[in-house]
Image (cartoon, rainbow, N blue to C red):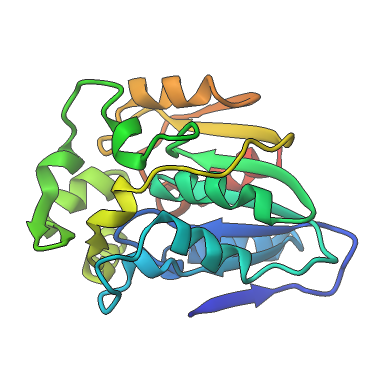
Length: 238
């Protein structure tokens, strides 16, 4: 498991745990991490097993949540930041975090108990460019690179978008179909809606944001951590 930890000198402030979306990895956060570094903010970026090319086809939501929880300490405070499918992961993992200060969703899926990421994505009956990009590969899903370029990274400079597309992996179907089982937690939640998103319909994001306490609108594509990391950092820290 690839985990990055920086700025671990101030135990009194919380650590932000960055949880990527489907087909992605801990590699996706460098620009946001740089903004955190400039502000002296501690962070961890975790790789989810469901997005690893060599993962077994049965790897699902519970495995991703367990991977997240395995990287926190009992004596420290944390804020979980979940992007896209990563929103379902932080929701499932939340009860496992002893000192949880906040949940932050970036265009994230927020399933209720008994709902899967797939269930949530179907609450709004509209097909997105991400849906068009998905290709079935046995028990896995891949993304058509040409369509993924625009669906995920439409506002990014072309070199950044090309770099990201080349790093995309396959994703287990099981991870999207697995139901949330974790109980709700009494923790403040922030939802950052990406209003120009071509992957997660903004209408669906509006519905997801109604399940959270605070809402922030960002005029952004699906990946503001690459397209506008300064603005995203300010929204997260607000």
